[in-house]
Length: 379
Image 1 (tube, rainbow, N blue to C red):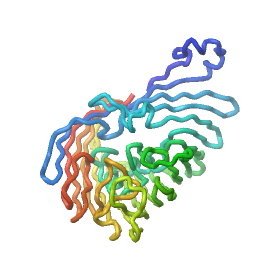
Image 2: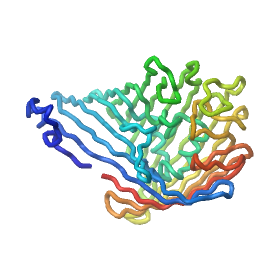
Image 3: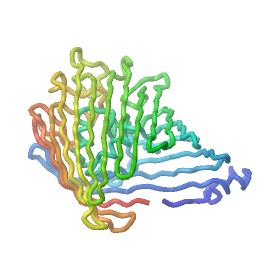
Image 4: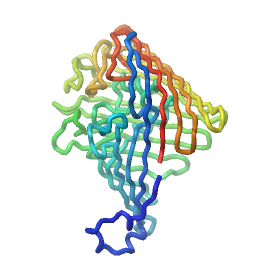
C-alpha cells in the first residue's frame, strides 16, 4: 500500500482549508492485480481463456482516515474492480463497485454508510481453501445453491456487498467480535439491479490457532423484486503450524423458480439446500503453499431441476446435488507477488448444470473442469 499525504493530492478548490487538518489526515492507495490463463471444460467441450480475479478479486482503491481526537476517527473507502484482460470494470461497470462508503470509528467499533462488504463475504473468503474465485469448490457450490453467503447473487454482487446500507462492526472483546449490516431499497426495490433489502449479521471468535465464524442472512419478500430466503453458515479453522485446517457448513432455506431473476417463488418449492466443505493449506516451504479442498452440495427435492431464487444472469444454473474438489499451488516471488496454479473438478447429479465458469455450462448432469496458471500482485 502507498500512503500519500493529503497535502500532496489536494486540489486547488480545497486550498483554503487549514493545513492543520491535512497534518492529521492520510490517504492510502492499495489494490490487487490478478490475471490467469486457463483451459476450461464442460461436458467434454473446452476452450482457453485469459481472465482476471482468479485466485483473488482484482481491486484498486483509496482509503482515507482523519483523527478526530478523543479516540475517534472518520474515514472513507473507494474501491473498484478493474478487469485486466479487457480494461473494463467489474461489479456491473461501477467505478467504485467493490466499496464506496464513509465511516466513523472509535472504542465503540465502527459505523459505516454506503456500498459495503458484508459478513457473508468475510465468511466465504475465510473458508475458500483453494482461492476465492476461479476454482474453489466451496465458493462455486455457494453459487450453485443460490446462497446469499457467497461472492454474489447477481451482476451487482448482492450478498458479498450491499448498496444503500448501514453497518456496525464491534471491537474485539475477549476474542469475540460481531458485525451487522442492513441495506435499503431506497423506495425503488429492484433486487436484480442492487436496490435490495437485506439483513446480515456475523459473529467471530478467535483465540490462538482457533477461529470460529457464524453468519446469517435474511432476504424479506418484496413483490416484484425479491423472494423470501434465509441463509446460515458456521465454520471453524485451526492452524496447527504445519498446516491450516478449515471446515464449514451452510444451509439455505428458500424457494425455487423457473427462470433466472424471477421475482415469484414456485408454490410448494420451499426447502433446504445444504453445503458442507473442508480443506487444508500446507506450507511446503517459506515461499510455497499447497491447498486442497472439497465440498458437497445436497439440494432440497423440491429444488431439483429448477433454478435458484434471487439469482440473476449469468450466475443462475439448474439445481441438483453436486460434488467438487480442487488442488492449488502458490509460490511467493516476493512479499507482494505470487504465482499460482489450480486444477478443479465439479460433478453434477442428473439435472444440475453448476460449473466453475458461468459462460460455459455443462449439459444436465455434466462435469466442469478448470486448469489455470496465473500471477497476482498486491500493492
